[in-house]
Image (cartoon, rainbow, N blue to C red; front, side, top):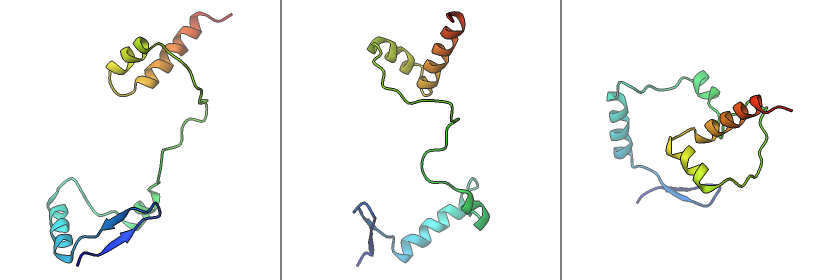
Length: 95
């Protein structure tokens, strides 16, 4: 019988059998790009989103769909590029 655990959110996770766990660990051991974290490295890991610069403010803003699509079409980082474009505009339009 499979062993399960229930998460705080109510999801039920099926744990691997000892045989499955051994197969997983053997695959990890053969992968040259992975290694087991030491206790100090594991302690440095953080959950959730990394802290930002502290200088940004979250706002709700309505922007034309066409403009958003142009920024998104360039790939990941579109919000940062949009912020940079606005920042550059303010440099040449300061009162």
